[in-house]
Length: 541
Image 1 (cartoon, rainbow, N blue to C red):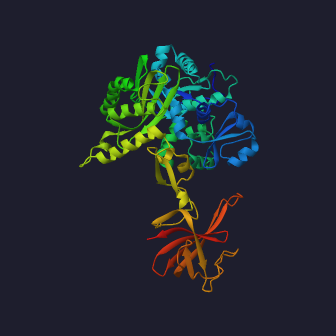
Image 2 (cartoon, rainbow, N blue to C red):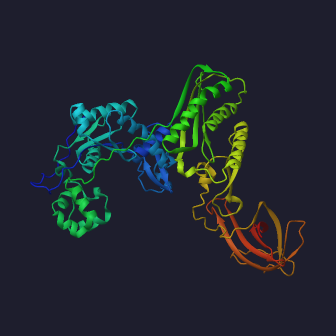
């Protein structure tokens, strides 16, 4: 439907002398992070869902808001308010990825789309309005186009400039009809429309505080000030905000440049039933795929292979390369993916009808120039490990990385060969960039034992050394041995204890004390004391 804007003060008789603002159509999808998560995880639309970022609610669904959940709440408080709450981690890349089809659908009917953020985009409406018979006609085409791809919760505002158009789109929340939400501000009416809005819509907290101290409460009050006085008092940012409040938005709609289509696909009719036939038939298409990347000045370091069979099955897998894929590498991955599905080298359980290659990660070609001595050994190692991985499974070949943690053994995490650390759930849980209070500072020990070695630490009289409830040693360490077969070593110097209290709120949490000892030969050791038992965690060289 078409709705008129809410009542506002009358427009001023004169406005600042400036070039007219660009007539803009703003498309707004409310709660887009929630919409993207619901689509990605195939959840019902009425799910009480929250997206969590650093322990706080980043976004919440309408069902969750009905239970009293609000943005900024701690996750435990949100769960207390809504018993059936579903929580998921917030993923900004998911918002961008799921909004791309929306942008592409709009670009098929009107060019010049500028994506301000996922869920909000702007279009110069002058050209589409001439083509579709008016601004309302252009908005109706957008509604029908996006409804065809399943997006019905869409709001559109049309006004002079992106700022007024965005406020017009968000004003549709005040309407009763939620089928086709549209607000059109007549040309030249943006000052009248914006006049009743509070200063907070400018999203400049410092400027808002200063203006309120001067008795200014609305955009109309702010727009009534002289532009020269505002610039002299509040600087460039204040002057730009004054133009927005006056309905003379300084910004223009900058159309995005659609990314080049770098995908490659090949359809086979009749379906191919042999792996060698498929590899031979796809080789030409793989060469075209690599050549297209080079023409764009890019190389592919990670690609996604999607195989569709005659029976409707789909095999999808992501492959990485330490350098970049050439045509032979692409064909090898297609063949290995088929052989990794337990199909023999001479036949398939079902014929392949389509092969689709998607460049998942592309980088600048100049960043991957050949070195002076080439990269032959590295490529040979990767080729062999990737071949073993294709036969034994994705998790059969692992790479060790350093993650976060308090104990040295916890910082060793294995991820599948070729995967980035950010893709590993274990590496994400143990993010090394987090503080991890109680972790060992550098320099790190040279040798870390896979399993801590039992140790014995005694004082000068041969009595075991322990830590009392107040965190003090019962006696000074004088001798220790690492392992049952190790001779008793005299302690030359020692330091500690450094307590480690992991997950104190959890019954399965651990309380340890860490020590450093130097024996009579000058060798340094890192020891742990847990439940009155000593362990050697690592040694220094």
